Amino acid sequence: MTKRTLLMLSIILLTCSALLSGCVGQNDNELNSAHTGMQNDVLYQVSTIDALLEGLYDGEVTIKELKEKGDTGLGTFNTLDGEMIVIDGEVYQIRTDGLAYLADETMLTPFAAVTAFEADEAIVIQDTVNSSDVAFMLEDVLPSKNIMYAIRIDGNFSSMKVRSVPAQERPYPLLVDVVANEQVVFEHGNVEGSIVGFWLPYYVEDMNVPGYHFHFIDSERTEGGHVLDYTLINGTVSIDYTTGFELMLPSDGNFLSADLLRDKGGELSVVEKDD
Image 1: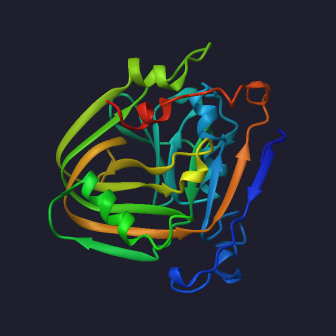
Image 2: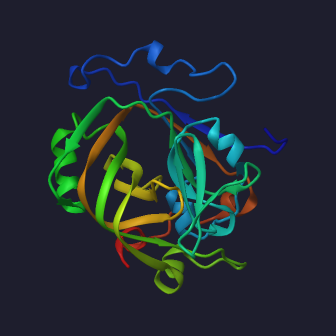
């Protein structure tokens, strides 16, 4: 950990419910390793989605530090330089050429969310379904809409539509303007790979993306991006019930003085869905 001062807000949501096929006890939240800060059933997040929407793209947390908190997740990089996907303990940067690059551990992130992924449920899909079909299916099987879920989809896709965004220069534009004017969209056909992301409750609005947020990387770890749409031919959907939440807030002056209460209207919907 560097010497900088970081503000940390740690919110632990302790949820025991028969709906979750048993309680999440203390043993489930023990450290996975004595040498890391990784915990089971905890979503670790750097900064907030509202800060990213405001154009706060300067990172403080290193990729090395992020990997100590989780092996699965997503985010972006310092100055908004591409899309991040964290899978099997590795962090990849998807740049605007659509290609995946293994991220150096010294790189910084202004926004990311990761968890130590352990599937609580797995669903095998053998029929062709689109992204909307999968979304409805998942919402039917989630035992509660009040906790968080990490989701991984491994399979064969007849189509995969993704995007990335380029690095920005000061003065940073709003994220909605970057997406509207500079995003690069890629469409892949007949590709094998993995979708990684989260379904989050709607009470997290302003902190993260309510509902679904997914990034993709192919099985060769050569291309990917932020998921806009897809059609799955067959595959496995793995779901990790997540009842803990740890939020690391930036300490720089830009974050401390930002107007995070600004009415952003439908900006998040545009950033997440539009192409």
